Length: 206
Image (cartoon, rainbow, N blue to C red):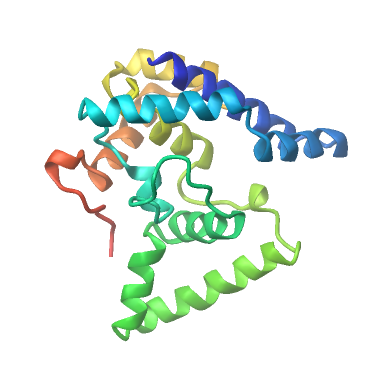
């Protein structure tokens, strides 16, 4: 695994655990850490991105596709609102917000219902009536986030045992992690978001 993946994953694990704390001070600290990511981490991320881009090593873009940020330049700050809307859409329906809007514009009644539900859920969050950490989805958010953030940084090449050991150390959930389940999750993500050389558009279930 690339050292930067381990560093940023440990940082995110700390944030996640503080967010889930029953202490208001811990949750405030989590919010601060989310908003005030150390400059050296941001700079290292940008350097790594440019190095990997120049070497043609950026092949998996799942997170960028989910957030509608595939064409954003490195260092672009995504607003909390945009992030939440795209995040909710993906985990609620297994499709990007852009895909949902296309289905809606094509006259799909199913998509219209999904748009209305998504908009209400988003507004509940915006007005402080919904805590996204309490939402339940078919896909485990902790596992999905860690898996997608590690693609291109070595996680896609780990054996089943190495994968479970990695998640035991870096995942904020209580674990333990079953090798078979993680291998299946990785396979599903790679199928939905194939390497760029195999196709640049994410595949999602209808």
